[in-house]
Image (cartoon, rainbow, N blue to C red; front, side, top):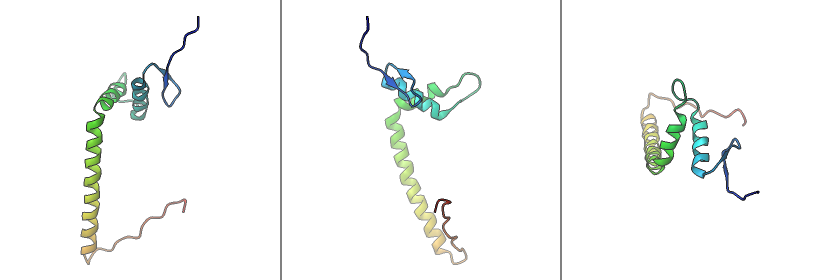
Length: 94
């Protein structure tokens, strides 16, 4: 007899019983093969998903530090009369 069910799919279209498993599959795919022999990526993906809040906080702090760092570099370059600022690179699409 047919039954009704709920399933979740990763970006490759593979079926999973839980959203966590589908997300872990996508994260593991992003990481690619890690380590020798069988890949460590699925285990690392589980850890990343479990520690998501901590990682998001770290990335937010990193972004804030990078903004401060970029501003500090710009001030250093602008303040030095012996350093010429190079023109901005233009993208190939422009």
